[in-house]
Length: 157
Image (tube, rainbow, N blue to C red):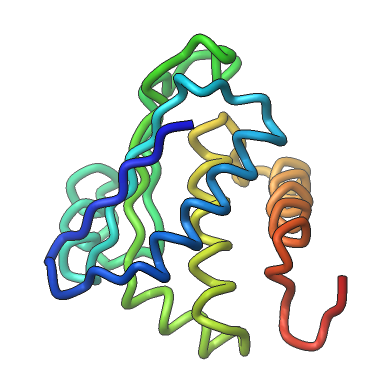
């Protein structure tokens, strides 16, 4: 899987962030059978930027933690298989990563990993609008995070 990570502002760049995102995306590629031609683009930004996108694309006038834009959005099955090249874009607010890590009592790294897999699962066609779908998506998120050792504080593998 090819992963392109960019930053809204150069002063936000951090190799540790890149490593976490790479690990999560590569694990998702392995688990979900994404071929080496699969491509995902990830932008790390601040609340102001994601707020603008959230308002523009979802008509929600506040910052959010993660936005996913699947290139095959609206198609029945989501991901088309290993021959699909461009999967889509994920935008993550680093401000929200910090806020939510504190709010939920776990590390910044775990929250960044969580938002990355959450965005990837949306790209792959998962959603959480209905309780059954939300439960399935949460199981998938935790499965990937546990495989990588990103467990919640106080939990063990």
